[in-house]
Image (cartoon, rainbow, N blue to C red; front, top):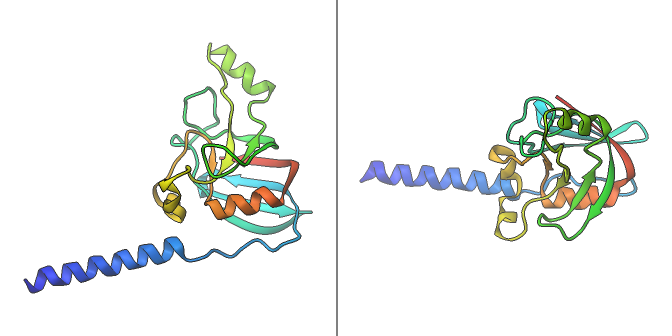
Length: 174
C-alpha cells in the first residue's frame, strides 16, 4: 500500500511538471518587428525569425512525419526543403491560423511529374488543430508531427501572423 501511494505521488508530481511546461508562457516576440526571413532547420526542429538580418526569436516546431529529405509528391509526409516565400494568410483554417508557403515551385512540379505524381501543395506554418486539440499546446513539440507543414503553438502562430511580412523568404534546410 505504501509503495502504491509513492507511485501515485510520483505520477502526480510528473503530471504537474508536464502541465507546468505545457502552459507556462513562452517569451513573446517584441512588438514592432517585421519578420522578413524565416530559417527552418528540420534536423533541429527549429525555426528562426529574422528582421533586417537580426535574429529576433527561435521557435521549436513540429514538421512532417517523414522528416528526412525533400518533399517530392503529395502524401509523402515530408516537409519541403529549399527557398520559398510566405504567400498567403488564412485566419479561418482547420488549424488555429496559418501562413502559406509557396511550395511547390516549378522544379518541385517537374520532379513530381517525372514520377507520375502530383507535387501537392498547401504547405503552411500553422497552429494546432481547432477544437480540443488546442490544449496540446507545447506538448506538440514532444510527439507532434504534420503531413509536411510546420506547426507551432497557437500563441506563436498569432505573433507570426502579425509580424511576418507578405513575401517574406522562408528557407527550409535538412
